[in-house]
Image (cartoon, rainbow, N blue to C red; front, side, top):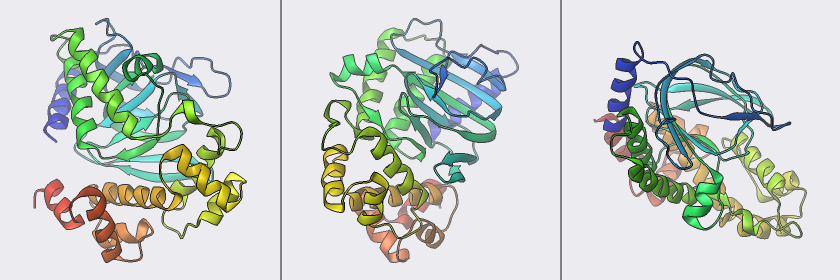
Length: 313
């Protein structure tokens, strides 16, 4: 987490000296109108707004509070918790607010046009935007990253830190570095995408709105038993039709998707200090041994090894 430590040092040293207006843009999900005062309780300590980067914005700052309600980003958005302590977020889902712990170094991802509502207090953050048009030019296709508040991805983390450090240094290396990092970030975000907008079928497929409802239902119910039949009811499709459509849209079976999200959620909880047994219970695993098997298969290490890696023990 050396990148996080460096960014934290930069924000602490700059807070008293710099206060840029934010260039991050948020709009009302219902009307599409730009909402200008979303960052009014934030102090921006470094910004790339004057560097002329093509389709990419990077900022560092602190916030006393950040309570967006039914907002969307015009661009794909990635924020990083650069504080030394976990951040508690109250995020709104289809069944009300739920508490999410965002460990130090964890990433919040919001796809362009993806509505979000949450509440948080006291944060040190770094954030980047990469425009939909930029991603299209770089990758030759559009992407829709899966929304999450607690992603731990060392590769994406390092790339985002690189771009934020470039912004904090005054853009000293030049726009070419921002372009290279933008390409790498877009490529990494594509790996976290559930839907390629070119292949969402309006007839016979699951459709973006139904898929979003299913994802939200999964996120709300990770601690509980989840069946394909239950998810098919959320999508208003027959179980067989739903399973086929879900696999076409996401590249994963419903079961595979649920197990991946359980493992990712458990990893975030463990990184924020939860015991392995507690994480297993809170993420719907049968027991600690079940979590260990899934965790090792997905991340290449046991939860115990992950604890030693992240906590230095």
